[in-house]
Image: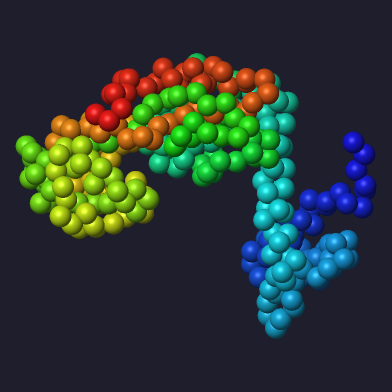
Amino acid sequence: MILQRRLLPDMRILQTFELAARHGNFTRAGEELALTQSAVSRQIRDLEEQLGKPLFERLRGRVVLTRAGEDLLPEVQRLLRMAERTMRHATAGAAGETVLSVNALPSFAQRWLVPRLAGYLAQHPRLRLDLSTRGGIFDFDEVQCDLAIHYGQPIWPGGSCTYLCSEIVVPVAGAALPAVTRAEALAERPKIHLAERPALWTEWFGRQGVELENANEGHWVDEIALAIETVRAGLGYALLPLYLIEQELAAGTLRVALDAPYSTDMAYYIVTPEGRADSAAGFRDWLIGQVSFRPLARGV
């Protein structure tokens, strides 16, 4: 494919544009790039002339993106990320190393994946890992990813899904709160709710044959990491995935308040790009081997 030279981007100018947009100021962008304010202004003017439209409104002491600039910014940021990742992979290849690009949600990456990686990397000393925590479903080619760990259902356009493990949640408490012997007793205790899973407590109590009078009672947090810390601080009981609290359970900073696990309809899947050489096959097999126990039957 032959590209028109006038449409090929100058990565240095795109970097200047991105910094100017981020700082809202040509001078500050220049300081970060070791350029003068006039040099930044000239580069932005060249880009505007190439595109045939203004990208900034020049105001006193600052610049503001025009609508065209706002539309361009996320695409430029994507190109810069791709260029940076391409160079990381190229330099690894030149050094005789291989790069494996892996994506996982932040909580899973931090609490389950990273603590296990040292063992795998010790067995593969020439492997360089490129770990990201992008959320949602994305195009593998666009982000140059070899393998993603996906939470939800086994649906990923352009990707092949392999089951990793179910989501099994248990009611847990910190050291300051006592265990309970019946679900009815837990219904009266303060609870921590995940904003992204508002019906989870209701589902769990329903499985125990208990109807909550006030399903929204308690405190609300917007991510699992915060829920874990809230429970550790003694503010209430929470339903948390076993795989994400292994360290706290082992250390005793969290404990199972009632031995009543519940397997939700969500799961973790390993996703690899369809139609591409499976460079991540070894890592995928290793991940599956790291699951410490097989999931309970659905609906336990």
